[in-house]
Length: 122
Image (cartoon, rainbow, N blue to C red; front, side, top):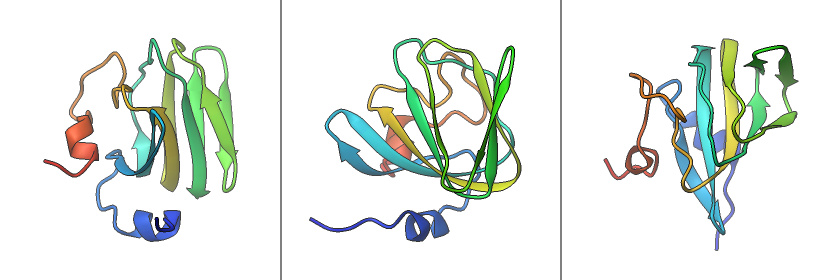
């Protein structure tokens, strides 16, 4: 058993929008990612996802409103809800998602990363 430090893990991330699994709690992955710019509108039909901002700020856009997150804030995107993460400047986040959660939900884009890629197996 060891401790994991989000900042040290994020310092190793080199690509934006490319989450990396750093831990697992039961059937949930703990991931880190660096974000910058706009992602893609998508939804996860069967899973909620938690965004925690380690550094910077993040906007989660919904069809009828948005939620702004600053350092230390977290937000849960409910399953089945269309959303789009946007980071005007570089943002470091931790994510908690079930192991079945597809990175870009119901969409496949150039930003889509497989679970194998997120685990560092590819």
